[in-house]
Image (cartoon, rainbow, N blue to C red; front, side, top):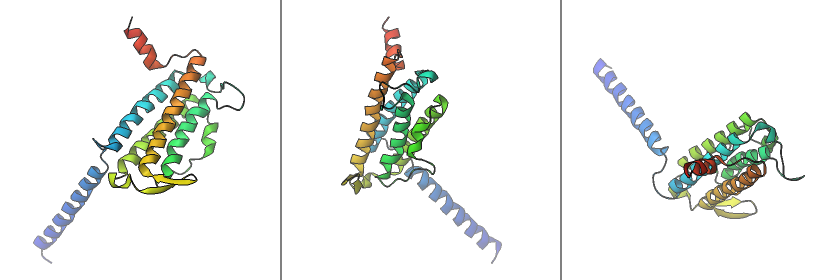
Length: 188
């Protein structure tokens, strides 16, 4: 084989690799419209509020619970993180190794916040990779069946439910949610 032929083959291989890499980037780009984009927008909002609230809570309150047998502050945050992984399994997305219900035993504020952030990033990455064409796909869901879209609805609902719970916990402990505090400051 002469040098021109080798050069041509190498050039074609490099072009193919470049096209494949660009296709991967496009496939992984967050959607800008449609259900997944709306879901990711909702998720960004609830993530910001949960993380901001977790940061506003003092470490010494992370073990506080309103009554015996009810999740503590740290357990609620870790339950949200765990739910972000668990619920996506119904949509066919496997969690990273090491994720288990034992997550709720983590009480260190920095670790809890890090786990929350990582779980939300996992949701973002996963939902970005789910094609719109799979949203109506039927999947097993606990004891029944539903669609991938409904799994995502349930995931968003779960996040918001525990955001409300976390707001109540914070207020019971004298912590004003940061976004409420900012609004109060700006209206003075």
